[in-house]
Image (tube, rainbow, N blue to C red; front, top):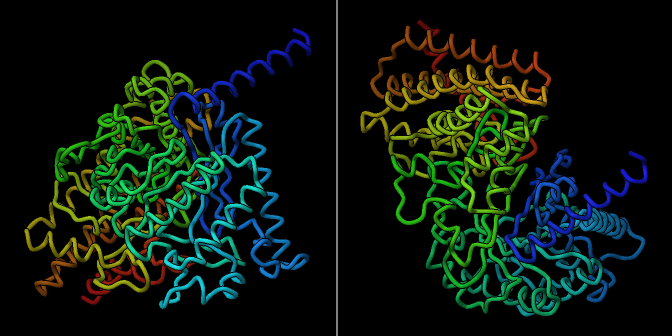
Amino acid sequence: MNAHLLKLLFTILVSSLILKAISQEKNGPYILDMVHNNPGEPLTKSVFNDPGMLAAGGYTGQVINDFTFAHAAVTFKKLNPDIFPEGSAEWKWVMDAAERVRQNIKAAHKAGIKVYYFTDIIVLPKKLVELYRDEICDNQGRISFERPKTLEVHKIMLDELFETFPELDGLVIRTGETYLNNVPYHTGNNPITNKEQSHIKLLNLLREEVCVKRNKTIFYRTWSFGGMHENPDYYLNVVNQIAPHPQLIFSIKHTKGDYLRTFDFNPTLTLGNHPQIVEVQCQREYEGKEAYPNYVMNGVINGFEEYHTNTPQKGYQSLNDIKNSPNFKGVWSWSRGGGWVGPYITNEFWCKLNAYVISHWGANTNQTEEEVFNHFMDEQGIKGKSRKAFRELCLLSAQAVLRGHFSAVLPSTKGWTWWMRDEFLAGIDPEGEGPAPSEGVLYGAFSNYYQKGLLQKAVDEKFEAVEMWKKIVALSRNVSMTNKEDQTYVKVSSHYGLLLHQIIAEGWNIMAMGFEGDKTGVYNKEKIKVAIANYDRYWKLYEDLKKQNPSCATLYKPYAFVFIGPKYYKTKGMGASVDKYRNIVNKS
């Protein structure tokens, strides 16, 4: 075959992929993906940053979320040229940011998919706020949409945004959280200062200025604080005040709250008269970030195990339950990221699995989850007996994570789930050390279980998880696939999961025995010593796994999360709690 013919065939292939992506978005569901970069850190290296890869995978759009927002890459020159004086350092920063936005738009369109910029509102230049503070801030110093000048400023911002980036397809709007880590010349705050009315004012502004005036798309994320995301009455009080528009779409996490097991299916899905897309996280920030197997899409699509045990659901339980709703318009996968710091991975295999299943199912919801899963195995060259082993491993991982992190059968509250998040393991000290600490939540859980006589059962469940991880490790040895690096990672990451959960089980065992000793004044010192020896041994093996395997993810830390960067921890955590009882038993 000559070079000219090869080039022609390649052109035809690329063109067909582009047409496929365009036609899917025009006539079919939205299938979006986002790499959620860690705020304030170097950008995540990922194949999911490549819009060509997304187009080939059937995605119709890319959400850019580097926290250098597109609306931070404008000068507000029509409002006041002194905000970013031409030639200044801050003006140059804006120019450089704008060029990155242009390159991202160009790359996505070249691949044949649309591009939407993740947008925190409110984020405005510090100089603008300084100049117009009296006109845009309320009596608490918050930039407020209750002030007419704030609306005017945002109209000017949107005008310049789409004049500067006319090919930008739309925006993803977030309220509630405002990350300023990557925008040194900007400031901001949560715009929801007047409950539902703030959402209504912002939505009407965006609908008119973006959807109606420019025929661009707004994905309005309901993720916020105060009820918009998870309270049906609050949600309807807002959306029923907004006239529907085909380009105004509400984006809603599938969970009632953040991406955590044992959290209810989101009751706002299907409500109202507006189109909705569903957000799904593939690299689960509270469950290891795919440092170990954690296949969640069977639960997302069909309903999680706990919805029939300790967190029974009323109404809808899964995407399968809502797929025929006229409001359901697609899915948005977070292929990478969420949360803070690590664990950091270098192999994206488990992310690819979760992303593949949710995106391909979302594109054709007549398929079953298992059918899509089987297609993934076909593409990975997983054949014969390996298929059964791989499927069993993946389904078992969801059961093991539930028992190792949370509970399948014991009563729980939403707060207790936060003890394990990002790369951190909290202890049982009753008090945290700073803002949003994960320390303290286990003390509440242990207290409740102790009072109900369930504390030992809670510990036993952690050892039940360990037995599941042992089976996962055994299954991983029977999985063969085309990509040998991925095959190795399946084994290494399974071993990672086992060792981590052995640490967790012994950590809970020590803390439970110590907690009981704190209450009774009598410590079972011999049993605590044995558990501490096991705990120490598993930490050593865990560290050795990382040293001996280049593909191994970075390790968890025995500290509680604290919302203070860049480390996000202080001194408390599982390590400190274990050491408390280590010191008690060593005194004898």
